[in-house]
Image (cartoon, rainbow over all chains, first blue to last red; front, side):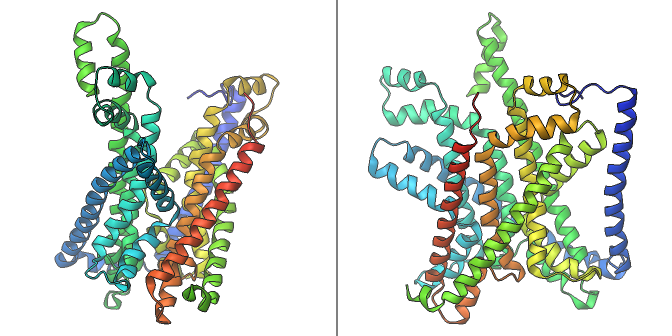
Length: 291
Length: 215
């Protein structure tokens, strides 16, 4: 790897880098070793503490908890993208009675902590006469309101970054404002903002873990329950480790997909530039990828 | 209004702790984040690798899980006991530092190549190039995203409510013990956060104006 921040190393610098690398690794390994030794000393790796995870019933519960996390994530993801689209279009509306409320909606829901939103839905709504609110509804509702507002800003930025000619051309061929938005502007903005949207999906997935504070029966909620079983020596650290592996695994998969899409999009854009050249096959391909 | 006035003690205590959490976590995460960001662009391959692993691992872990580990797991390790408050500050700092590191790294990319080349040409080494020439400009360029991270940190302090820290997010539980309506209390908490976020945004605009890089 070359960088403008430092010169290509000579023999002396290379030795220095080796020493520096060795010191860094030693420090990091030292910290890791300390943590692992503490874990072993306090008996976190004894069979007794992990026995609970060998029962099929416990494993089933964990799978169910993962399902609960994923279903909250999936519904919240779809709803926040829809809400984000509506709010973005609303904010750009020419009618002030549409754009002003949308503006304040976005500003307010971005400023309130997600956990407070979930609490409002779960603990607050029943006190003002709305009953039958489940923890699932609270988690999905909170995630949707917050991430919808965040995505609205992303979509709006995407639409505003488009060349002015796109809108003008649409109007010139006789499309109505709504058609220009839905047929010309929004598809382009969505594509440009796709990496950002996918990154936000990782945030939604992570934030489902807040659900355990409003008693939603997801991975962390189960981890705490299993971790407090005194019969198996309160294996709270093993339970946290299991939860960590699941969460990090799920998020890494989603981040990986986001990266793949970003790379493909970048390639697609290159293809579009090639469209200008007289290269028959690639033009059609670039066109379809852009739709 | 009564809910706020009658329980002013709860609200002041809660928001005081929120601000303490935010203040210390912000300072520590800025320090750790800058160091990790520097590691990720350093000439030492091992440092780059460690920085990358740290950022990718922690960024893909929910904050709730990190605080979970510190609040419930740490006391079982037989190490010196720390209060939930300190545990929350450590967790929030380690989590936020990854975002700061990424922001600073993107800021380094905005600094024109010539700046680093000129610094190298007059014989500065990596540490001097970074700390004297590149980082000061990078930080100025990333003031808006840096403040977005800090605003996110401010809102994330509420997560500590799930782990026995008496801050703004925990006001609701205490209010309901006193038989106050939950929705009213939560609306006041929300208003408190809206005000704090607005203050941070003002501060951001101030720094943006003051530290604008002329290019």
